[in-house]
Length: 477
Image (cartoon, rainbow, N blue to C red; front, side, top):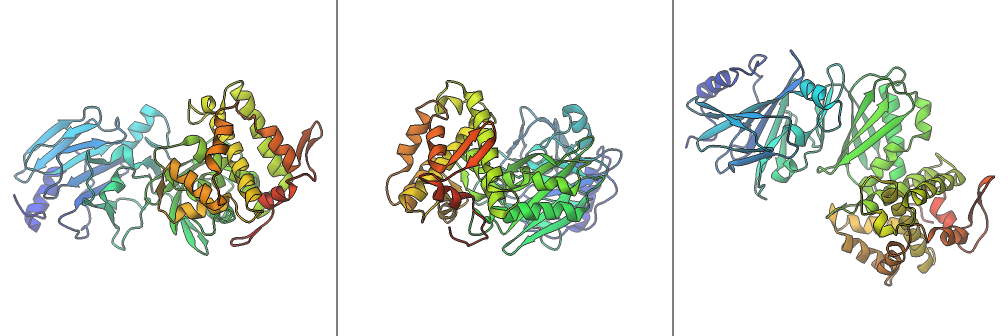
């Protein structure tokens, strides 16, 4: 087998051969020298005649021969090249490709614009305007079916300023672990850049399109405010650096419309924002802080949507009150409105039944938020208001970026100083959804009538005030 990197003249000849039938835009600029034992991805962002991603995968010695797309459907043929110039077209079947022996590298095209026409604008398959595009890495990056712990990966992008989840070297080369290919997050190409800086973190932001009223500085100020609100929940921002892609949506006004987190390492976030949004609309926005609050807890494996969404939904209102962006009364109005909608959706179902269907139902979000509130209050009650749900999230962070549902409960009991989690969970799961709500709100002094929500003295009103009171990072109740 030839050495991992062929001599320069042979490599140039291979590049010329690889351009046959793939509408290359001339030879790429010299690429940084990498690790010859790493699986190498050379990605070229193509603008003409349509936006596309040309991907070349240089195989290293010992690279597995079974490959797959985690998000199949965007590529139907991969070309396998031998060093002698022989090429073979490999069909992609159900996202899988078997690479023949002697293959030196793979080439294929992910036709971004054609995919957008086929599927419609989508966070995963592609969206964007002008020269800017958004796509999920899982859609266009082929990867080994089995990723071993020792697999090293290099990724190099040319043709556009890219914002990927990882921090590149000065040469534009990304050095990754093999597992980074399993969930490769959201990727942005082109557009404009700004940064939101915190004392302990930075948010690198790509704006993938144009707004009619917003400046780039307005976008980063909005994201910085949301990130600061996360710091009212955690003792430090959960990651030293994350990336956020903001995609303007034509023909829509208001503020942000939808967001999503991908659990790449570090996590990557993307948010849709109405093209005609004005900066003042961000004062009422909740989407950015909700998505950022997902970073406040580790990834639960396997997933428990009602807990992860419930935590983020509960803290979305609490954090905005703690920062002063909304009043305590407004926070409770929002929570009660959500509880009412969740209760109406759940009907006579138990919480267990309400959360067993779609992970995006009102039952998942709002029964989860009610449980998070109840858990926070009980932790404060049994510890004399000295410990809280925030402490659970901080303690979990010391254990790593992933956790389990069982470990979550163990940390709750440790913070409480006594068994708490399982008994409280049983009270919720086994009874009709929201059965615990009325007594809990009454004890907190949160009352609703035709005139609206009132906050009144009650048995646990001091706990309520500790939950929603103004604070800055590091402040105690």
